[in-house]
Length: 147
Image (cartoon, rainbow, N blue to C red; front, side):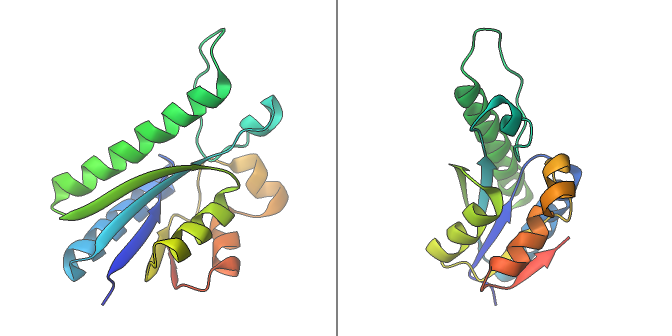
């Protein structure tokens, strides 16, 4: 039914629920599961609104910290899927605006379904601009399951 399923993962409770729903569907359908973690950094203020939060080492590079935190989250989600028995799993990280990165990845990887958590880590941005899941449902031409 679904050949490729995209699951955005930021380590939040909502993303964890979406990951496990996507894992169940991937196992049921024999799908390729694609994990995407998006991080965003343009300034110290915007870094606090990122989809993925990291801890900055004093004197460290904020971009590198955000990138590594995103990589850790994507690797964790991938390992959970593999441990649960999903045979085909890929994990990616992207920098940018989360909703647009998710929709673009779904299109580029020809995903049949996006499984996304209803709430992620970007709480302030969600209050001001609408949640990432809401934006994805509005921008995507693919089916979106909000968990």
